[in-house]
Amino acid sequence: MDFTGKVVLITGASSGIGASCALHFANLSAELALVGRNVENLKSVADQCEQASGIKPLIIIADISVEENIARIINETINKYGRLDVLVNNAGITRMAGVMDDITNFDLLTATNIRGPYLLSQQAIPHLIETKGNIVNVSSIVSTVPIPTMTPYCMTKAALDMFMKCAALELACKGVRVNSVNPGPVETELFKRAGFDEESNKGLYSGMAASMPLKKCAFSEDVAKMVVFLASDHASCITGSRHEVDCGLHLGAPPSFDGK
Ligand SMILES: NC(=O)c1ccc[n+]([C@@H]2O[C@H](COP(=O)([O-])OP(=O)(O)OC[C@H]3O[C@@H](n4cnc5c(N)ncnc54)[C@H](OP(=O)(O)O)[C@@H]3O)[C@@H](O)[C@H]2O)c1
Picture (cartoon, rainbow, N blue to C red):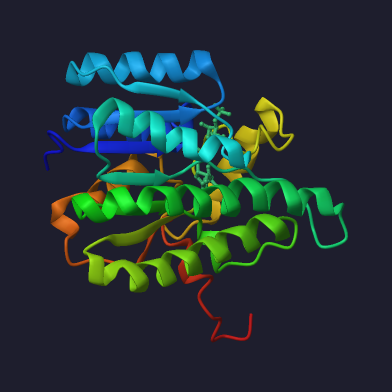
């Protein structure tokens, strides 16, 4: 795979899966626009990308849940590079909340996980039509696996998947592909930002690893490899598809035939 001369915009590039995507695209010589809110983390990821490719990424400090920032993200990217080939809608947050918890959880998650990617895609699409580019959404396995302590999060990821499918069908005639990667648990900052301390975060992932069919959790790199593949010409016949990177979690527990 080679992204020489291609411009890739990644949201949430300052941490976890997004940072890993940035490095993988850099290793394949992409020109990068990296979006996030944490300046220091973004600079650190950008430095690592530059070391890998020799190309300095564009850093865009922006909160994607704030509508005024959306046009600025696209404008800064086009002003710098003059084109856009790939949009990776990766930025996202979670909260531990069920249906009886405060509606502010729903509002916050909807704004970040759905409205932001929706608006950003809207602004990116005219440029992606020009390059016959593509969008990759980082969704989640919980878009189809309900977790009642994460109801708003599951809902936003289900909505993101349907957005991906509808947009794929709408844009196929323009040569623009839209896909999603649906990770299972991946140890990042995601749950720490939702209130878990270091120790409980470790315990959460080791517990989940034990219950996976493959008895492990994926790393950010495993997700990034799928994102890069979908964004590449190797996936030129793939659109409107979900791609689970979940160590088999979506398969569920096998049915019991012995009455136990
Ligand atoms: N980790 C998992 O187990 C898992 C599983 C399935 C799906 N996912 C999905 O993977 C994606 C990446 O999450 P992660 O696990 O890598 O978590 P992470 O380490 O917490 O990284 C989240 C990234 O999103 C950015 N972000 C969050 N809200 C933002 C906003 N309003 N505006 C701009 N950037 C924002 C953060 O940027 P700043 O730090 O700069 O604010 C950070 O770069 C998310 O969509 C998440 O739902 C994660």
